Length: 327
Ligand code: NAD
Ligand code: LMR
Image (cartoon, rainbow, N blue to C red; front, top):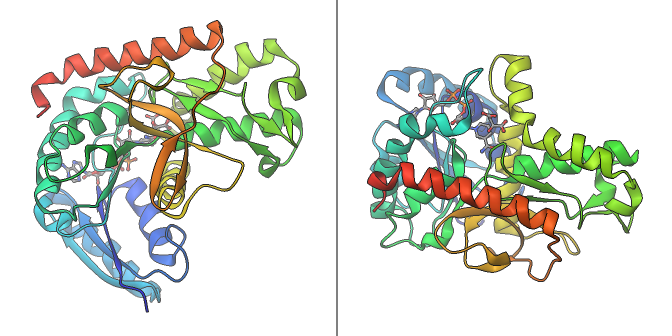
């Protein structure tokens, strides 16, 4: 029997938490042979609700669930964690941009960034879901001393999956016939969803679709604004698709990306594609042996450059707003 993997999840009694935990415990994230221990963090007033979630996890009798620990103390939740999924934070409401959450949520990622660096396993891999995810991840990573700041990532996978789904629908092909979409930049309406390198049935998607009007007027703004569209329709932000994207992100990081494909992850910029160091930016990556690497050498046209740079500038602006929270 394999050793259980310790997975800390913050905001565990929230909407995304509720959609995430049962899938992790069932084996959807790390595979159906890997036991897991869940270490769940909530704010004190939600501890009773979290107790109810734990009762439900117990009642599933998941064979892979080796233990569950619920707490309102960050150091307890992160102790020895191999994987940390940071969801706990306020979601936006109708009329807000994600960056409007910087002041209410940023502080959480300072406090918890400090706590997790103290007690998590030294090889811990961190996924930030709470918005604005890229800058919250930057705040948490800035407090990394024991841990590798390169292991702090933000979720661009929902945007990536949204792009795949739109390309498939427009091409009239099943979604598993589409590969190599990219969500560049920030998880915001200034991201750049890119189908110029995507492939549908082995043919470049742009040639396959052959419809620049659709790409520029529907595909790009459609992916950029999908979160808002869902928020307006549901009266609450995305949940099921967000939890699914978190599962996909961690699964592919740990278990590897499929051959001849890549995924989008928010990771520390390192100068690749002329995006300077100092922000967490969505890049195309391939993962192997638990490590990600940026897919290098893709062509960047002036049209793409303009959009990639606009997203970078927005991330710089966000960083300026939270300098006081960074280590
Ligand atoms: P929610 O309000 O249903 O749940 C959030 C939970 O976090 C609550 O239970 C709350 O008590 C808890 N929480 C708040 N502060 C905390 C703290 N300091 N420590 C621990 N827990 C804390 O919200 P949700 O729908 O689950 O969304 C959570 C976050 O995920 C939001 O910021 C939302 O914008 C973001 N989100 C990101 C993406 C993405 O693609 N990156 C997608 C969807 C949602
Ligand atoms: C999304 O993209 O659906 C999430 O970031 C939630 C939101 O606020 O839009």
